[in-house]
Length: 289
Image (tube, rainbow, N blue to C red; front, side, top):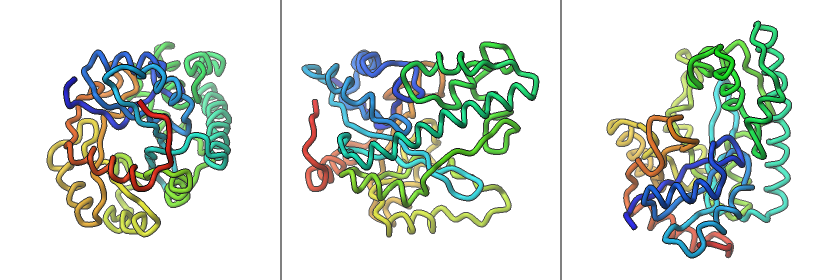
């Protein structure tokens, strides 16, 4: 096996295009030695992925990605090594998933009012057994020819400032990271540059990270997707300033959905070793491959 790893990947348990087993098979095909399953508001794909990887050269880590809310923007919190049997953790994730269903129905209604005949039943079909999300609505819009791509659907209609956007129940970033900590997990701030309260905002990423560190943040996603070297270095400097673990991954949802393919983002071996050491000290015993 190579040294390729990916710490940010999604399955059909949320809005990915591959089942957990298919994702494990694809990771093996791509030569990965380590894969973290980080579905949105769900750990339902973890057990299947662990079982599929058993006896193979691929190591699978349990994870999650929780959407949280700040004024005029979203913040995503990754959690690694969470105890997927923690009752409080699963009850909160279930509430978050239920709110996704209600929001999806309201978004479809808004699109219908804008003249786009999107069926919620079709959106539900596209989601399969996973948590329904805006990417599934975007897929339905592409199918109908209302937009050319999923990216266009978000840019024109489904983003926070889009005409079909609908809010849903969310935790604050601090609530999410503390929930992850109570479930034995390592909280990591995902794709920090995506936090965009607006040009007229006085948002300061460094000050924001300082608040999260005070609440128990352990890592920050520096080696993400197609981040250019300058952005990676900026985020790594913040990681050094607060002694955070600089993590990374491709945010893989399926072939061709994002610029980078599974395992394409290089992550330093020291990151993996630091995460292993943290797990050995802090995380509960869990099944692993």
